[in-house]
Image (cartoon, rainbow, N blue to C red; front, side, top):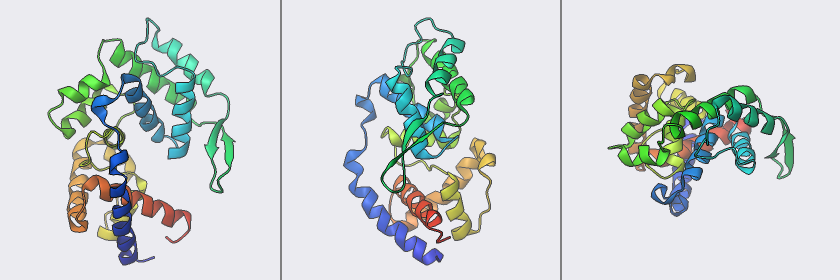
Length: 238
């Protein structure tokens, strides 16, 4: 599959993505429990595929472990409860439309990150909602989230802000988007190096230029690129 064909597909996907704009959440109307649930998806998403991350967050919400108030519980207590909840297999959608049961990887690390996040934010009588209202712009909101949500680097914070409908002008530079940048611009980038915000923003600016060429918002082009590259690799077109 050539870059031209990939670009044509991305352009078509952008039109599909834009039709879904009305389905984007309104962060100003969200409850704090919803913010914490979305944060859990993004934290887990750095350790596993997206479908598994959602299944993990669903299990934790079902077990009422994504509560915005630690209620005097220590990080260690919360961590133990999370590990116990993730010890049983999770239902994850399979490619053929069926369901498979999978045990989450890195459950101890995920439990530690989530427990520290809950205590870090709510133990200090702060809220994710408050962080977003206080931020002057999307970049400041991203930096604030990186400071207070354990496991949030630039990518995870950007994904969170997109999922809650806070902004559509930050890039989620995951491996699929980075693979596209290598094909389209010859940029060879390691995801591990993009934990540094200054480098992340430098690459993000390059992707902003590409988005302008497509004539859509960066969030739209980013998601369309993710979808296109993910399917292309899955179907062995690349």
